[in-house]
Length: 513
Image (tube, rainbow, N blue to C red; front, top):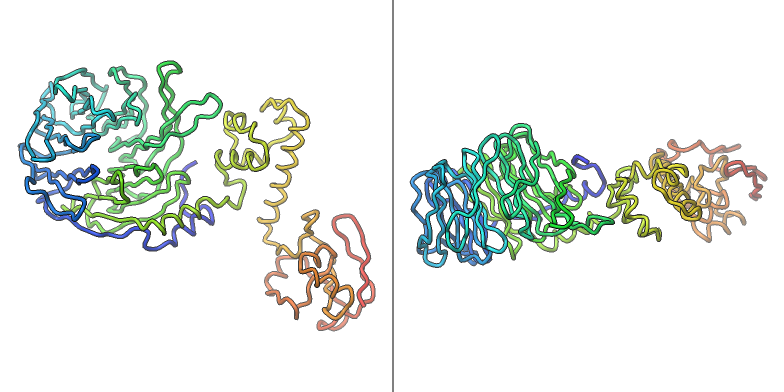
């Protein structure tokens, strides 16, 4: 479901959270646009149109003695660390991908793109055995990262290659092109799938490190985020095993930006997704709910790159304003945000498929989770289920199980009617959840009123007696939302000895002194 800002009460809570993330350092050493930034466990690397790569220590953000790294003769478009952090790869318009020793800044290898075309992106595989480079002519090269030799080469149909990401298990990698095609490759460089993902071109893509359950078949999916010139971020679920094959599923679209999105990245724990845009803003999303956690607006020009640190809650964002901002997340505030997100949504029709699954488990219907997921039952579809659809469409054979599901759904429908009506709860019968008709307002001095009020407002409502205005003041607008109360005589007193009232169709008598 596409993201809509403040679609739920929880979203409003999150948007009110202040100081969840704060800027702790700004790096302003580059002489031109910052194109990319990347973290290792102890270092931050940045590269720029000024042809250099700079290395900083995460302990105090001081630049290393052997920085900047200089070799490229044209703009450096991308840089990335090997999993160990000992090697840094950089690629450039000069058609080369260079490997650097991060401890001394020495070049380990210079790998030239076969076509000589400008290299736009490079990425290490999770096991550090391979390196992928993609160029402006659409060529994809898989290099042996130990021998520095070309292993496989292929190309996409149209456009320049501008994005690349490996799945966390290393079974596949994804490339994105300036024509908007998302292409999936296995570790042998075989094309598994190609799909038009963004109409105006892809700019970046990234995998979450945390797997997602795939339902009954037990498949393990990984989240993939892609962003593009269409101002959108799209979330995909990808799975690939040599026995079960490949599967790609579109999940949702995030539309927080109002201009082309140039970069996106998941946090190391997979709980957050960050994006940067031509609108000069950086947006931090909660990955599970897809709500906006924070919007950062400190950059003065396009935000071109963003990256999370692997072991600490740091975020780096780079821009065409020639700066890199370092942001730190407050763990306590972040936990508060996640707790707020974990609260169930008030309106059932807003539930996602995962919310429905959680509800089934809470109702003791865990065995039905797989069936509901297979049929894409979200909150709206849940409320529309009937005994016929449970039997014929979902193939639930047990009559008792169908009856239990229908009872639970009916409870949700009743609750939905109450929530959407705006009627105060004290005007609703706690037993039938129906609006009470002709309720009696009891004075606190009366025997019936006193007895009822001794048990609290809920007991009074169950007895058809509403609290006196003096005992429990009620704003006038709450009465306006409900059926007007009937009074006889003075508005300050009730001069009635006997009054009939009914809940639904049942009539009862209540004596009021």
